[in-house]
Amino acid sequence: MNGKRPSIEERELERMQRIVTQGQLADQRRKELIVRLHEQGMTQVELTSRLDRASRAAGGEGVGEDAVNKLIKRWRNGS
Figure 1 (cartoon, rainbow, N blue to C red):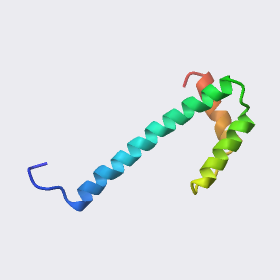
Figure 2 (figure 1 turned 90 degrees about the horizontal axis):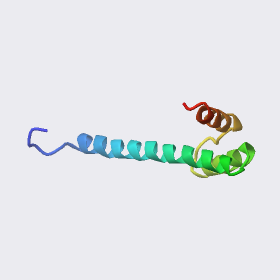
Figure 3 (figure 1 turned 45 degrees about the vertical axis):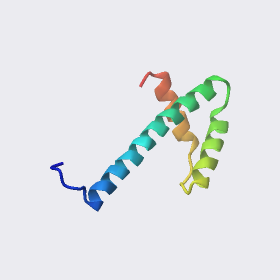
Figure 4 (figure 1 turned 60 degrees about the vertical axis):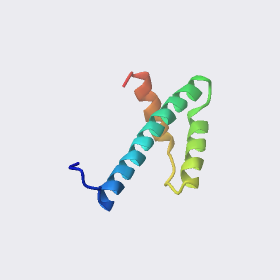
């Protein structure tokens, strides 16, 4: 910046970036928890049920078992 006050749009851009970054960090933590709970014996069906319920409660479209399956497979393959 050149010493002038940021515009409304510039402040909003920075606020949106903070939200996006928080979402990325939350997604990483969610993946870690999915893997840990699966390692501790929670089935993919149970994980999917919990994730789907939480997603719908937040206004999302839900989570399918295929998404959980893919995430666990990627983790197993080291990706």
